[in-house]
Image (cartoon, rainbow, N blue to C red; front, side, top):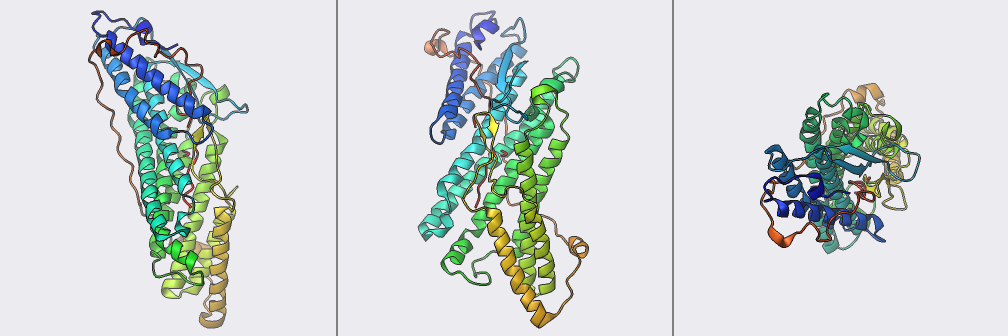
Length: 440
């Protein structure tokens, strides 16, 4: 049971309202998380974002008051949150109880980042294949896609803040420098994993930005199918660089997870679903990067032999994708999941397009250009650098609230959280994160 009146002492008696307000806003956050977990349909992630942001200034105000001895604590309070990324063999996510307000702050920020990521997923899921509709539908879909990408950039900024600021301060507050903490905390609250999650959300945002860039040409290709690219199609060379940057982000996230030195038992390993998501994501993005390099060579400069070589590499990368149907990383009910955006795998669609262009370029090379196919090594030496389409939104903590809130909140107002037993930190919210992302 978390009741700030019971775990803290107010020497002057002047902070009763502040403690009550913190209790009430924490209880509202807990209620919203439980509702999202139990929702029959899509949870209201915008509400979760709001209540978490409401609680944060109160939590920071209490932490500030403890630093200045305006509030005293006899013992470090213990907070309990479910781990969202721990590898497990049981359905329920493990609950991790640790002493420290720093643990509470890190878990609340993690919840906020997941909520933003899940908000993006909900938005993307609501528009479906909007590119195949009317022009008005396409424009409206583009607006929603921009909003989803912005939410993911916000999530990325929060994860980065957790990695660079929150966790180092938490570790520094430990007498042993965080040695025991690093063995007992959930994997998502290590600097390496939170930095990896920041890269995942940014990669997902860039995928949405690329889909937004392709929306007009996707509509034109749907209404007027045929060989070649429509005039509205963006530069294949630009698309290749965008996808190569997505590949670099997913690869960086995958490498960050490999650096984790987790504890034992239930939290000894990062969720396999997240690792699979990152592995598939980087192979898929690399395959698209090679595909666009091939189409750029074939369509823009008639270098059909180069195009064949690039498309052959694209085919190999796409074949390495596992399920081929993961979209974005989403955390729901404390578990990272991978969900399908459409019945037909996006990977299968991309493979079909690669084969279609490959067949056309092979025919052109056999009958017109007669050029030797370059080796994979020679092509890989010419891979261009990636290009970023989005940037993370830098996050800053809100101003701590330290004033007394009067009689609006009372210690027996009925708003107190009876228990943390049903509370899921961030875990009520993947993968469509890995944070969820059907951008196509």
